[in-house]
Length: 262
Image 1 (tube, rainbow, N blue to C red):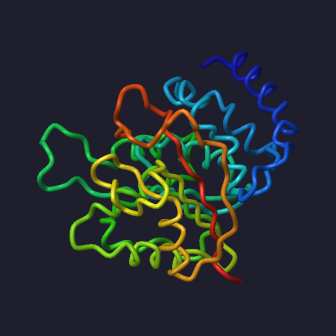
Image 2 (image 1 turned 180 degrees about the vertical axis):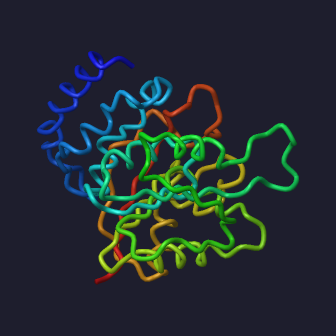
Image 3 (image 1 turned 120 degrees about the vertical axis):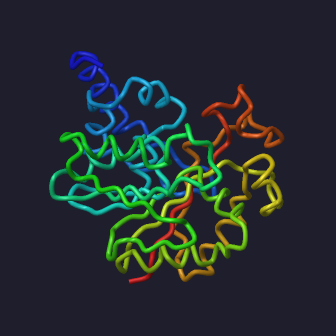
């Protein structure tokens, strides 16, 4: 994307500084204004066009604003995929902050021609534009995250942690809890399942019940801060697998925010 278009996007996002001032639906966190750091990060011309094409559905500025990420902070992007949010985090925290992209290793039974899960973020971290990004390759079952970070973020991955054989998800949340400094924030965004379904659909539809996630995370010692409706979708009735073509980036998703007690 050229700098002219980047400037236009920056101007458009700046308008959103006041657009989030409408009342929140009952049970959701109060909307937060977009900081200059977040607006600038999303408008960064270095972001790939493929990422930008997803912004209208993924609402990155609003989601990161909900998390409360600030310049100078340290964030863990847990299971970052292609680095969509990693790039944005890097720009928000700036030179005085740091981003740890924590990706799993390639499975021993994976096809030889399939790239390792960390390949995309390793390439990203090698770019001088993202000098504040470090890549860590760890099995989810053996997480040893950096200590005293400000934010741990995982988006559209939590349901898959439930699909790991012989693994207690409580250990996953405990590892996140241990990594955060007192007062640190834990964000979980995932594809919503039918209310009350618990973990029934994690391996079939790749969805999970928000209330079940909330209860699991609270059991690890976290405090519940609130939720955001920014990536919710009433058009999704929760009956289709997330890989259905008509649902690409258009699933009903919940965003939950937790805090490690001070």
